[in-house]
Length: 81
Image 1 (cartoon, helix red, strand yellow):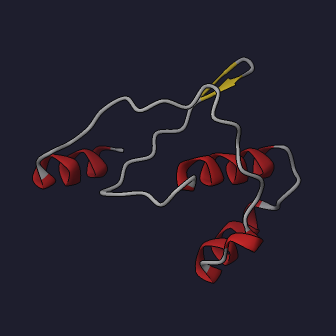
Image 2: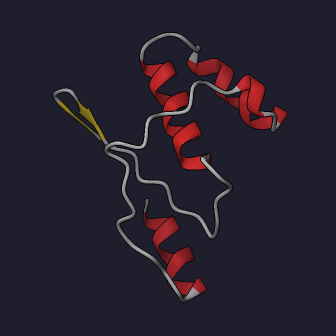
Image 3: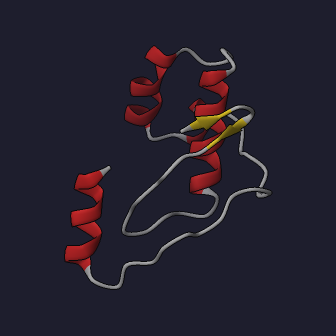
């Protein structure tokens, strides 16, 4: 979601590695800035290697908005996105 200069990402998962969300956000920002081609995203994901991803976004502005303790609720919300 984009609102003027602000960009929002909603990332839902059952667990994340250290800095994973920041790396995802930074890579998507690099795509938006034209530093990485949108067509390269499939390759980046497929490689599963940090060196192919974009920069790590700074932590400012990133926050945890919800925690699901019930797996069924988590997967139900993933389908809604």
